[in-house]
Image 1 (cartoon, rainbow, N blue to C red):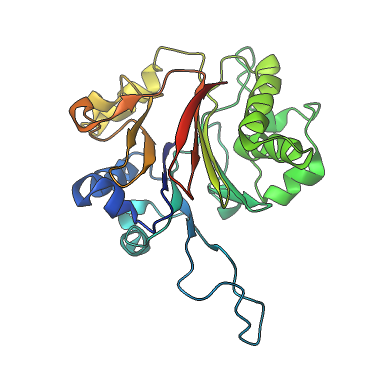
Image 2 (image 1 turned 180 degrees about the vertical axis):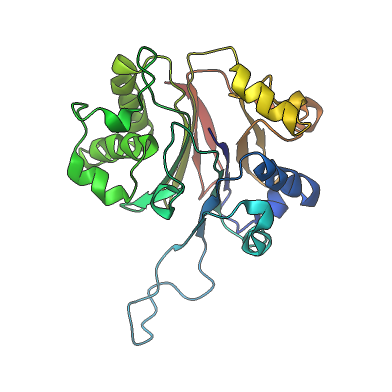
Amino acid sequence: MCRLLGYATSGRNLSLQDVLGTRLAEQYRQQSMIHNDGWGCALVTEPTVTRHFSDGGARTPETATRLYKSTVAARFDQIYQLVSRQGARGGIYHLRLASSGLPLIIENQQPFFCDGLSFMHNGDISSEQTGLNIVTNHDFPVDRTILAETGGRSDSAIYFALILERVRMGCTLAESVSQAVALLRKTYPLSSYNCMLQSENELVILRACARKEVSPRVIELYESYGMERFAHDYRVIRYRKLNTGGVVAASSGFDQPAEYGWTELPNDHMIVASNRTGEFRLRTL
């Protein structure tokens, strides 16, 4: 189980610290005291050089993409402070807490990136009856070639591969996520499918989890770090409109007061946001 954060601006390059403020950005980072199995982020930015400029190599792109992943906890990684100050018109940040015995290797660190899309997931896709993770289910209908292209070896990589397959069929990002969840729920109905999917133009944020209760293991873990006040809404995602246009959304785990505009995203709903204009809307799964 992991902590997710993503934002889309009105086309301006804003850093994580710009979006959250220094205090909350550091609060988000400190969750890696618990979610200490590495971290990662993917940023899409307005380039600082002329687009399509020929400088001897490939022409400069319309959008600059930055991807960083580490098996070091964010609170111990000095790169985090540098990256959190990097401006981007869209960004997603992931703090990992490995589950189901999935190995702590760079291949399983998120966000995954393929076909210009970055993806991260908070959940454990396992059978209620056997406790076995989907990675052991070799009969599950996922395109193994696309799965290999994600670079991952986890349940989250399978989730991403299902989305990619539908994007390649011509579905929108939101519809691709919706169809992937529908397929996964046929076999794993009680798993959490909270996720964020980002392209050069769009950010999709989904809250989708069948369970309402938080597992005793999570509560005990948070209590052991003195963070029990954040355990009761472990699977909740909240969002806030940015003053300059756009939206930021995040898993629980740091201060998200309603008086500052934070609103709970209803379960089985998603936010679809443009990182070009900052416009966003809610839709059902």
